[in-house]
Length: 145
Length: 145
Image (cartoon, rainbow over all chains, first blue to last red; front, side, top):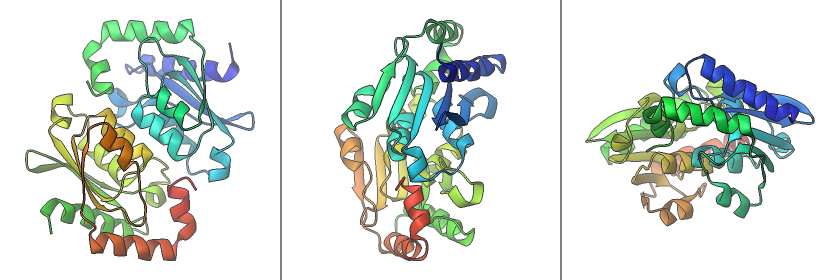
């Protein structure tokens, strides 16, 4: 297991432990995590704090140069909002845990030159399968459905 | 002046008064503002709280049905992140104060069926012109440049 995807999964698991949606993310610069986060819809009543957005928020204000040297890890294929944040800040590489349970804006990201790697990680799939079975309405809300 | 664009401009002006970036937004449902916000990069040290994102956050968790009946007003053409949030939640109509000082993802939004109206409002342009002249680096940071 990649160390950084492991950290993103740990964030997703923390989300479950808090009664939330099991999606986590970390942003890595020069071999170091500068921001980590997980979905906080339930915990904070937030419609914008998806895992990736929470990682951006916790990384704080960074220079354009820093963002352009970052890799973002996320346990789930990024939705249009999180993909838009990736494009805004010019994150060049995204490592995706899985895209079986939800396929985000991967085509848009690729069309704008973002390098994507999909790991098809069994633990990421399991976390989402269990969650969607447990809370289908909450999951639909999180993806605007 | 449209009442709701007026409210978005009032949010942008509040941002200036706080020493922040002058971009404001409101989300309207059934003739009533359900969320209002302004850019909080400076005030909260936030890279994700653009005006539109702050309006989504302040509207709180809404049903998919509600989002699909909303109109979002924003003083400035929405960047990729805010456009992604608009697409995630299926907001069907966006009223844009101006797109002279920054052109966001209008083509992407239109290609996905979002109805856009650009007002080319003089006050919105003035707020951005004055801000960009005063704080060019801060503005570049806000758009990932």
